[in-house]
Image 1 (cartoon, rainbow, N blue to C red):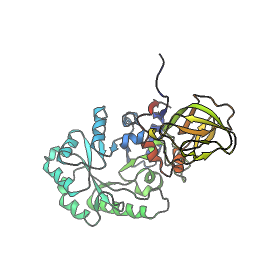
Image 2: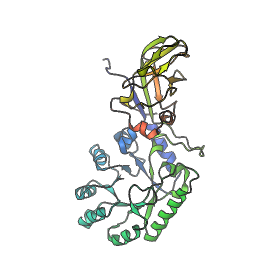
Image 3: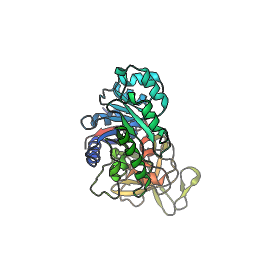
Image 4: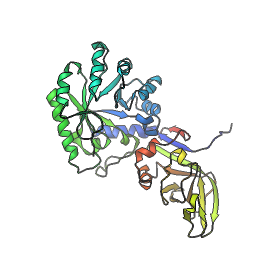
Length: 360
């Protein structure tokens, strides 16, 4: 039977996910590691990633309760932390029923917790704003909050904050944030969580009882100062060449005639575009990978198609597969060419792109 449909794929290497998790966890041997699988595991497929890590991760983290319910509906049993907390009393009650851990970052959250019977309260993390200024109790108020609601802090409660500049190796703000949160945790007899991916790899002092492993789980954010760490890209995005044509010098390709051939040029049209999540603002010269060589994007990114200059390749055929990022081409490099970050590119790969899960 012939397989129908456009063969544009995001190939997800589940073995790489496991290996990345183990490498990163080993950097903080005295901590437990939550695997962050919000936003459909950064575009990789939350169910598949959770299943792959079922024997590795001691818990998962998502943004909000919808994402957590989706995991439970598909048989994921580990504890799940709701990073943005809950929106009402009913969600707080449901969190206990489904074994979700709740991030408390407003006084109302404590009040909703108090409305529940002591035996029906979920485990909680308390968000402290040490300088990120998005969510959490400020340093001026957190001591009084913790004293006022001390009866609600059961075994397993965690003080949590977020490093604002973790990927900046010499930024002392990371040290200041760590010192503030650790001192607060010690004074109230609580454990803490602070380190994200960059914190795990670059700021050992930020390692708490729990670390939150996000982008590095997917093979990104390889630290320049750690040559022992060999993260593997988990997603390889590929698409087929669907047409080849020859342009004469002076002819253009794409909308607005924005790119004009400076020589006789062979153009490959590739079946992927911004509707699939490829960045529309990727500039001319953005690389892709074909036949063990780099090729360059020319012309504007269209909704469904890209065009590349393949003049210097010996033999190119329709149906040859082009790697847009992944095994041979770091997604970070493509992101830089589009003035964005790897997180956005991975998260924005659309449902039009078929996911294929491979083991190794």
